[in-house]
Length: 216
Ligand SMILES: Cc1cc2nc3c(=O)[nH]c(=O)nc-3n(C[C@H](O)[C@H](O)[C@H](O)COP(=O)(O)O)c2cc1C
Image 1 (tube, rainbow, N blue to C red):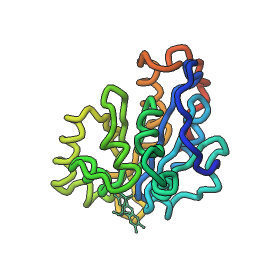
Image 2 (image 1 turned 90 degrees about the vertical axis):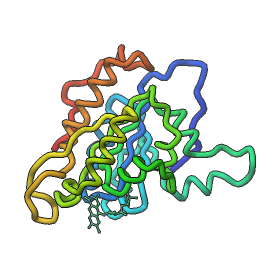
Image 3 (image 1 turned 180 degrees about the horizontal axis):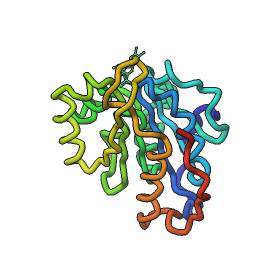
């Protein structure tokens, strides 16, 4: 894993790879974030954004060395005075695609409500919805079935955010039910398919290895 570094400004040349901003929030499914980073970095330039809670589930040292990881601390350590770059705006400009996997109930609610109190939600609040934004929710069945979830999902649908629905299985807490994050391979293939159809970056000309799907 590379530590955070200034976001490179766009060069005169087209990027050779699509730029994927992968984000994780505080679900136990964030243990699969490393696998997602690994599969996306096979064909995309990947930057990662994580919430404070998600770091309970992510081993930073296990992330691929070419994936730069940003946390809330970087937002403030990179800004000292007027005129300095603002990290969430730079990342929003940098990315061709954003993928939030896992999306916690809390971050879902914040996005639906327009709240932006950390790096991840500031990027979403500034997002350009002509660029794809995917979310893969992950939460306990009680949370998933809560009436708030339906309301929040409706709002994010209206915004143009693409939902990669959760699945039914035995959850980390031992309960059985819907709410588990879609398998990394499903998230990866869904985004890759959309990327191939997009006219931006080098997506259309990329030859993506068929073996690049993430392990479950
Ligand atoms: C062990 C543990 C597992 C958790 N798993 C989930 C989960 O799968 N989904 C979820 O939405 N929240 C889960 N939570 C609660 C979130 O971590 C909590 O709401 C947190 O504030 C989310 O912050 P974030 O959205 O900024 O990442 C879990 C909490 C703990 C302590």
